[in-house]
Length: 468
Image 1 (cartoon, rainbow, N blue to C red):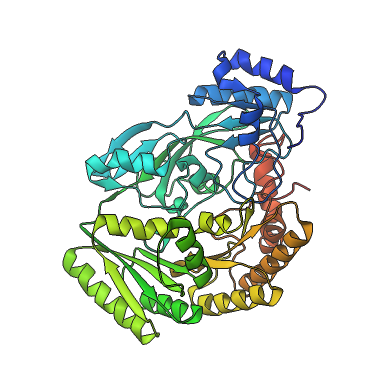
Image 2: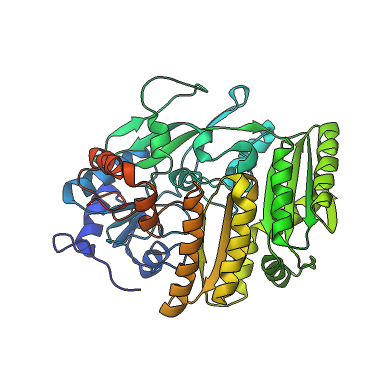
C-alpha cells in the first residue's frame, strides 16, 4: 500500500502532533502501519489508500474539534465504521484523517412505549439488537454484514428485510450531525412525522460522509414477531425462481424476506460451510406474524412456488434451524471469495422495478456466460434489487475489465427500465460515472448542496460525484 500525504503544509507527523492536542491520548491518535492499512480499504476490489492518521473520538464535541481543525487547515476527513462497504466509500483517496467512530457505540436511550431508540453511530446492528431484546424489540434492517448503524445510515443500507420494513432512510427520525466547520446540528425529532421544513434527515442518510459526520441517530424499532418461519424453495432455473418471487409479492403476503441465490452461490456455500444444499437456484423466504397468519402465508407461498415449478419447499420454525438457513445466505459473498483464495470482491448492485426482475436476472446470467467468467447471482428480489458477485484478482487489469464490462451491461439494462445503478451499496467512487448519468438533471443541485455544507471539500472528497 503506497504512502499517503495531506500536502506539503501538513505532513503526517505534524498532523498527528496537532491532533494529539485535540485528543491528548496516544491510543486514540495513531499513525501505526496496521491501523493505516485497516482504514485504507474496504471489502471491495478497489485499490487501497492509507490515511495519514486515524483518530478515535468518543463524543460529538471531540468530533467537532477535529472537523474544525481539519476545515481550517484543509485536511480531508473520512468517517469509518467497520469497513464493510463495497464501493470504496471509506478509502481516503486524498489521505488525511480517518475518523473511526467505533468508540462511540452506546445506546443513549430506549423508549419502548414510543418504539424508538437513540444510539451512537459506532454500535453495530447485532449489538443494538442484543440491547433491544430484553425490551421485546428489534431493529430489523439486515444488510448481511455486521455493519455499524452510522455506516448503514451513511450509505442508506437495507438488505434482506427491506421488502417489508423499507430502507435505512425509512428508519431514521433524527440525526445529530457535525458539519465541516465543526457546527453540531440536529435534523429531526422523535415524532413519527413532520412537515417542518426540508427533510434534512433524509438528505444526510445516504450522503456517505460527504456532508457531515453522524454522531447520534434516533431510530424506529419494532416488536419482535410472535411467530417466524423460514423456508427454502428450490427451482429448476433462475427464471422460475424470479417468477415465484414476483408472484409471492403480488399475492399480498406480508413477506419479511425474499432472497434469491443461484446454483453457483449454493455450491460455494456448500464448500465454505460444509452444508449439503441441492445445488440449484433457490429462494430463501421468511414469514412473520401470528401463528395462524404465518401458517396461511406459508401454504400460499408454497402453492405459488409449486405453480412456478419448484422442485422442493422446506420450512423451519426452530430458531436454531432458521439461524443456520440465514447464516448460509449471509455468508454467500464470503463463500464466493473463498472459492478463489486471495481474491477481492467485485459486486453489482442494480435495482429494477419488480416486474422487470425476472428478465433482468435472465439477461444477467446470459451476459456472464457470454463473457465466459465465473459470476454468482444473488439478491433481494422482493424489491427488485440483485447482485452479481465476482471473485477477482485486483492486480489483473484484463480480468477487472471483463467484470466491469459485465457490470456496465447490467447497469445499462437497469437504467433503461427506470431502475438505478445502486440499490443499497451506495456510490463511493465505484459508481460515480453511473450516478453522473442517472442523476444528470440534478447533478448541479447536488453539487450546490455539497458546496453549501462543505465549501472547502474536506468531507470524504472524491466520492459520490465530482465537483467540476
